[in-house]
Image (tube, rainbow, N blue to C red; front, side, top):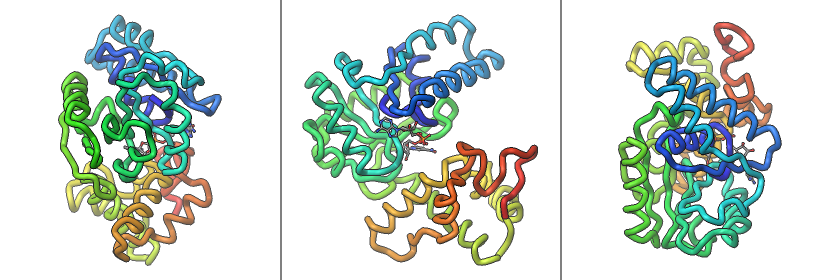
Length: 284
Ligand code: NAD
């Protein structure tokens, strides 16, 4: 895994439990410590629920090697990139990473929205490049979207299907269009909820309880936005807006403002809710 944030640590968690050795790389000094602590904490939860044993937890944790050096990927059969949703950041990583990989290594991106074909074209292995889009939180969510770029070879696709089966996940195959299936539908709904807030239709609590109780959603859209990360939601809207050139995908200015403030949701302690309070307090 390149990127040890919410998604990188979650994917490392499920791979390690499935018996796969994992190298987990991040450039931020504290990200790796936080990721290893989060994996251990989430596995503790599974132990408490008797979904896994303490022995399985210990074995899985021992399979995860934190790293700050691309050379540690020399033996990898698969590298999954899970860094910030910014195309130029991902491209720079692929340029630095690929010289360290063996030729047969498959390269995947966990991007929520960016073109797999375009990312692949910037690497030395478009035929062994693919989109593997896990859902958050990875240990809980059953789905993986699999996205083939125009040049993705069949054996690459089959290898990823086999991995999904090993991780006990179900796949949905999407064509390579902006934001694929889930986020094409989900994130414009979140953006619309932010517009409703921005235009004064209702407050945070009313919007979230309306969708929870009125549409039977597990989480309200603003709660969900905080859970995903407002920076990720905004990036996805920007990719939809640019990629499909339709004004209906215009990111809500209020979403932009929250991101500019660094109020990115749960991961920074504040978004549409303030997580310093119990229960979390709406910020509007
Ligand atoms: P995050 O902010 O939690 O983590 C991103 C990590 O990338 C950070 O730890 C950061 O230090 C690291 N990073 C940044 N630049 C780096 C570099 N040059 N080299 C190595 N590491 C670097 O973000 P996240 O929620 O884990 O999202 C990661 C990816 O997964 C994004 O592409 C996002 O669209 C996608 N995704 C997110 C969700 C979600 O619900 N959050 C769901 C599915 C997919």
